[in-house]
Image (cartoon, rainbow, N blue to C red; front, side, top):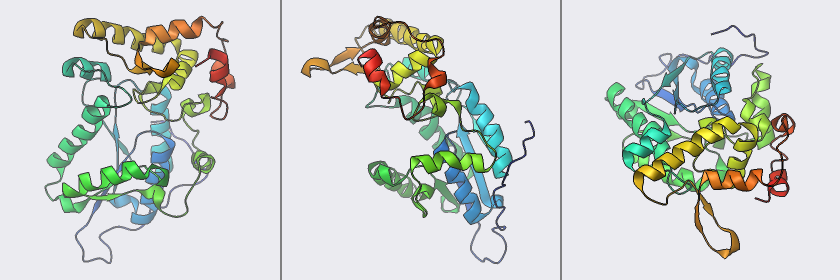
Length: 291
């Protein structure tokens, strides 16, 4: 890990063993590599002290290269090592093994490579589930996800928390400004216009607009996913896809290849397109590509 001097350093807090008769609690922050997880980790460390905090990152093996730089810099700024785990398969290998392509309705990849793997690690490492508190990077705008996630983990015996719902509440612009206060540059996917920094911008739960942005910014990465989708469709002998075409009042499977042909047929893509994109003008894709 390279050394990086930050403008600020996250408070070390106090040791959980000082001045308390309660059993120590291990605070595990699910660190996805995005802005939400950075601020969640910062808040948890500030509240509970870094001695009781663990930062866990689950690698899907298709992450953007710059995500790992962000992990390295975040470790230095926050003063806590980020533990990195990988189940061993990438999403397309999971889809093939499960004979099902993930889509906007079913994130099979996240379920197996992250949530199920997390449960396994917790069971292996913590026999006393009440000694663990899990911290997720969801905010108040995601009330339905919080409502679904909280009882699932609490019924399993774990404490659950959502640090972004603690005051002060931050909007997206404020959230983007936090890493810079610690001398950390935000992940490049945000600068290119992506909403999240997971799966290299190729999240199966994203829609046509984000896949169009992926083609525009990372055409070789897009083609890799396109070819994997075609190969798995052939293997399964089913008309299944990540995306759906909902034009003209109907809905049908839309392959990544068909989307690419549609988009590229609307004109050449500027070589430096991503250099001028920001999260504030992603909507320009609607006019450029007729999405």
